[in-house]
Image 1 (tube, rainbow, N blue to C red):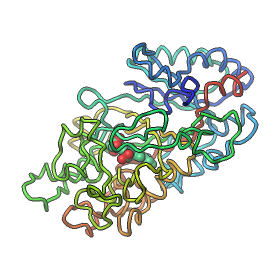
Image 2 (image 1 turned 180 degrees about the vertical axis):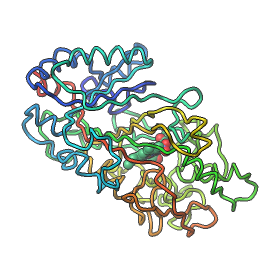
Image 3 (image 1 turned 90 degrees about the vertical axis):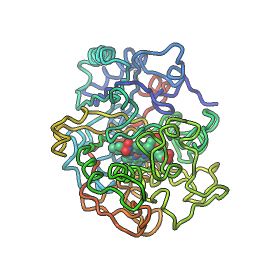
Image 4 (image 1 turned 90 degrees about the horizontal axis):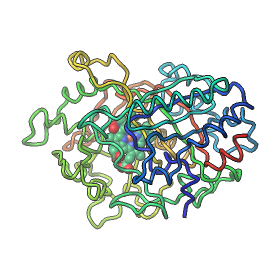
Length: 444
Ligand code: N7H
């Protein structure tokens, strides 16, 4: 089995708290930082075992991860052998489809961020007091380059991202650790954890049981997205009101209704019972019952371009569900920014930034996040010719994006989206090491 007390807690199951603080830092005094890392930060690092211990929950959890320039500053010998990580995310901006880095948060427009501390808590007060003690402990050893406050949305929107859709439903199950729910992908541990079975890349010994953390600050234009839906209701499905036609358009762009119900199983109307049932809400492959490969001409139940179909094509690849396609990530993102105000809703215009603090773990960035973004979401010829872009996260370098198949009765009709509803504000690539690596290799 996996050494769960040595694996940082956010990687496999997520710290799952209502508030999270991302503290991006640059090391200014290497020797002192290494000491403080061992004496003050290491004792606060939350393991997977601790996250699993729901009977005795830790109120504020902490994880830490380092960029390539951070590992270099710490003079860690031996590269991790991940080219995307070594280069840093800025070097990847155009390849990922971002229109350059003009929209990026300025701190991400260089390679000077050495690491990130993730703090997660149930209450803002607990979170802030732990942030304060981390700042005190590391005073004089780091500069805070940037930080981001994130929080679950209030009330009934808890667990839903800012467009309104339930998130966190479908993550892969790691073999030998989690027993899968129906429809969940089962993957070898080495797809997420470096040095485990399934990771075939040469790695330094200290890197075992670490994972690459991709961070992206993804701004969401919610009033603009809602305006697009309300302006373009699907009208070809009999019996739907205008509102229902708009809701169906959004659900087909996502592949799920706001409740989480998959459109493949609920093709014309939301089914909140289905959405809320973890034994049913992920139990589909896009193939007809009894088939192992999906129909490459039928988008009536779910467009090929739908966000969840682009980023996890299931039976579209013709692989048995037991065989991993090697392009899985564990997602642990959380919303940031305020609820949409009345003024924003009525003017259909975002005034205050909100979005998703996107976090994805994988053992190989080029097979994981970067592959999903570049070769699937941004590739209009994937799944098939004339599929179009992923209408949620696909990027075309800022140029217009065409999407096919949004109308269930007319799959060859192209819809050109009026804008990108998700705008990249950049990010960085980090490595979240094992707890023993922090103790024995990274600190002093
Ligand atoms: Fe996505 N959303 O709320 O709109 N995502 N995502 N994502 N995403 C998913 O199934 C969202 C982004 C994946 O297993 C759901 O858990 C938003 C990027 C993958 O069937 C919803 C943003 C990438 C899955 C969202 C965003 C991915 C997934 C359904 C950015 C990778 C699982 C809930 C602002 C490059 C697919 C669920 C599966 C699901 C949303 C970004 C990947 C609602 C708002 C950048 C692999």
